[in-house]
Length: 283
Image (cartoon, rainbow, N blue to C red; front, side):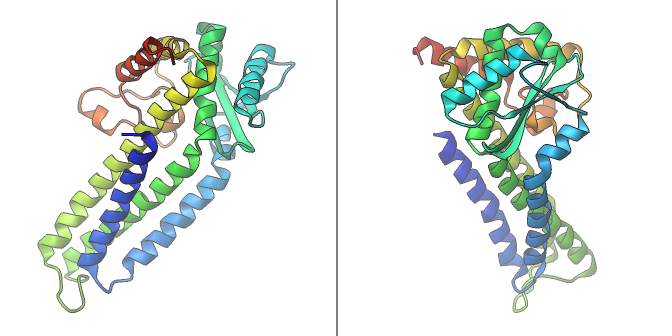
């Protein structure tokens, strides 16, 4: 299944959960209120997330004189992709990683850690930066904002449902939903919404890998970089916040055992395997 189709179906599933809740709540205005609040929060995030996340990691701007090789690579890739060269930033961390942010190619930024410059070859850096530019080209910030709005609305509504079940309010005006219906939705709807939101994030990572590999015509460069970055992050985890961990090319947070189910990133072995298959096909 194509990444775009899968993402569309997952967003449709989030919408379906809201419609299901609406069927139980009936005439309640809680859905509308929750959706408006979630949309407002995420609209603010969509417009200002780049500034907020760069400030959170104390990222410093780079230019052609301060980081000539990095600037050269990004400029070359942007020219190849026919998009404006994004702003470059450096994060003062020895743990190798990178992320892109910005609502569209005209308002984009790419940040790398000091550590990634130390362990990656030029070809591997090209793979990493191509992956990050692909997130910008594919409008993944917009996609994640839509998913966050829907999921956020579901979680707010679930909170309303829990209190409604406790105090015996809510439900349909003509045929009040049972307490068990309300409790079941209050418990399972947020879990389902979270899993779907994470699945969207993982799908977009796979797509950025594929798009980035095609941009540089060398899937193995990105595969090698991912292997290095994963090993380095396991040895020296990065001091990253859970709310921004999904932005990075590899998960800066530990994701072992059951926690992998709730990881924003797909398994690194699967990502590398897909890239190696692309190389074998001569992509």
